Length: 340
Ligand code: CP
Image (cartoon, rainbow, N blue to C red):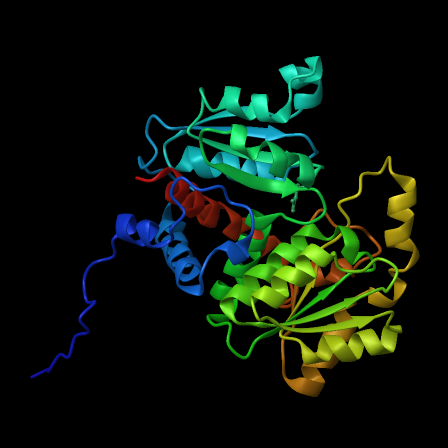
C-alpha cells in the first residue's frame, strides 16, 4: 500500500490564481524591481502553464485588444508581444512607425496619444527613445502600459524573458552568477533590465564594461535599493575578460541598440569591444577547466564583432532559446496585466 503525504497547497494548476498572485493587473510594467520575488515566481509559473499554447491558441483574452506603439525599430519585441496576444485569443492594433503615420506626426503629445489609444485598446505596449518623456506622459494612459524599451534604462519585458530563460535552463537563482558584458553599458537597457530581474530573484551579478561608457546611475541606485550582489569590473584585457567568463554560470551580451545612422554612438560601442569577444574555443576551455557550460545570452540582433557564429549550434547557445521563451512569458504578462 502506498501512503501519501500531501502538502496543504495540493490542488490542480489554476492559471487565474497564479496570475492574480503576480500583482500585475491594471499596472504599468516599467522595472522588474517593482515586483517581489514571490510575484515574479508566480509569473514564471504562469508562463510555464502557458508554454503548451505558445504555438497554438487559447481563448483567455477574447474581445481584448493590444495596441503596439513603437517609436523605434523592433522585430522581436513587437512581434512576440503581438503574437502573445493573438495566442491568448485577443486582437492587435499595430503602429510600427508612429512618428510618420500617427497623429504624433502632427504634433500630438505622447500623453494625449496614450490617452487616445486607451479608448481603443485594453493594454498598450510602447517603445520610445526618451524615457523622461515617457515617464512624464504615462499618466495620460487609461489602460496599463508595457515598456517595450524606454530610453537607455529600461526594457523590462526583455529582462523578464531573460530571467525566465535562466529559470527554465537552471531552475534556480540562488548561487547563480551571471556576467553582463559590454563595451557600452551606458546604453545597455536590455542588460540592465535583466540585472534588475536577477537582483529581484537573488542571483549574483558580475558587470564587465568600460569606465568611459559606464552603467547609468538610475540602474546602480535600483540595484542598491534591491540589495543586489553586484561586482563591477571595467576596462579588462581579453585575458581578464576570459577569467571573468570562467567565474560565471551564464554570460549576457546586451548588444548595441544604437541605430546605424548614429555613427558616433556606434563607434563608441565598436571601438572598445575587442577584449569582449567570445569564441566557441574559449567556452570549451572554460568547460574543460571548470566543468561548467557557460550559456551565452544575447538580446539580439547581434553584431558580428560580439561573438563567434560557431556558438549557434553548440551547447553554449541560449540566445535563440530566449526568443522562443519570450512568447509564453509575454502571454503570462499580458494576461496578468489585463486580467482573465
Ligand atoms: N531584443 C530586442 O529588443 O529586439 P528587437 O529590437 O528586435 O525588438
